[in-house]
Length: 474
Ligand code: NAD
Image (cartoon, rainbow, N blue to C red; front, side, top):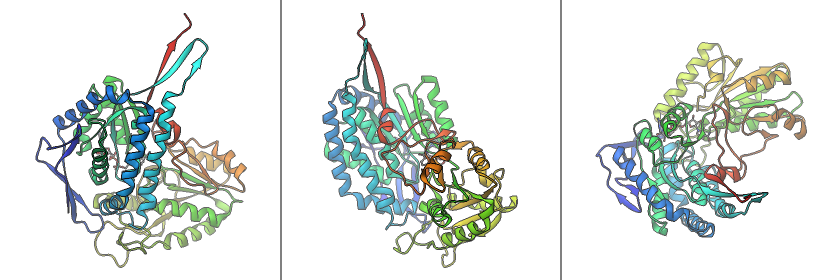
């Protein structure tokens, strides 16, 4: 049992203002595995004031200095990578043998990449009659979800540090443990007090103060569209910068002349990764009517290759959902799909065979889905894939775009050029063609209700930057 009873505020481990705690469930067993304190308003204000006090000195450091801090922190995070993987597996069920690759190492590497990007803050931009300077936005509230808890934290902390911002991190209630390690690392290396602060608590309780306080300049949020709306409302009266990374219902278009085997394997593996709990998961597979039956058979075979079970077993490819309540949500969508008349190809709402406890579900495929069904429109956030037929490419693009979301997308076509020409017609922030994969070097973010900002790459850094134009044309 992991017990935390302090917040990290202004370089100190401080006692919370209230005695309320949150019990974290291990989704593989349903048992309590950790306890963290719940912040109240005063705790949050202390963290915000700490970040504000630290800002003048931190924002005045040279980019070289900030770059060195990032490298030093990355070295120490590396040493604790295994520990973080253990904690992530314990709290959200990602198979332990996949956890380093999926959840930890890429996050640390990407964090380190911002050491170099810190230098871009000083790049001279002399134009005709004026100069443009980059300056940090200021005090940032960073609020995170539970599905990739370290990666998403790193995607905010790294550019914030590099730009010269100070911050308050608020992890998801279910997965705060790696954030404590990050705070311990910053403490150990002696990062100036107040640059990084950590509070844990219930989003809708402390969100209004973390996102509404006048001393906060920016909110970087990853999570549900519902919470994104509430956060935007809290931030509106003081016109804060709000960077939102929200939900998705991402399409994969497979054309009639694509390599069907390769395309379907890619699509099914994509959705089942992390037990379907990936914001950019390709949850709608759009298939040519002429090859629909063939495609369903391939998808079923690939889905059934998964080994669902104990995340500590090296044979497991799919662990539990992140919590019992997340499983209940997914089960209700499976019932909804059946009620709407979709055809269950494999999986379903029952416990996978051989398992008697834990938040497990089997990979679930629905065929005969049309884009009006709730299971094709709403984010399920579980291992559930909708197989939707189309008559021609124009209709496929129309179906792909017929969503309130626009986070990711993918295309498998005859060749790369044909796939890119389809990609350009999809309204989404990313498109993966011919089996391409995620990289933290590329900007990531959504169109429409999937969000309004970009994370990762050079663009992720710009979110934390204010531009100042100094006129010299007197
Ligand atoms: P969630 O919105 O319930 O919670 C996310 C975080 O927001 C948590 O820390 C929570 O405490 C906090 N929160 C909730 N209500 C809040 C409020 N009113 N004010 C301030 N904070 C509040 O989401 P979740 O269930 O943890 O995560 C799943 C969602 O995250 C999915 O919709 C998924 O698509 C999305 N997501 C998006 C991305 C992306 O980059 N676009 C990445 C990962 C996850």
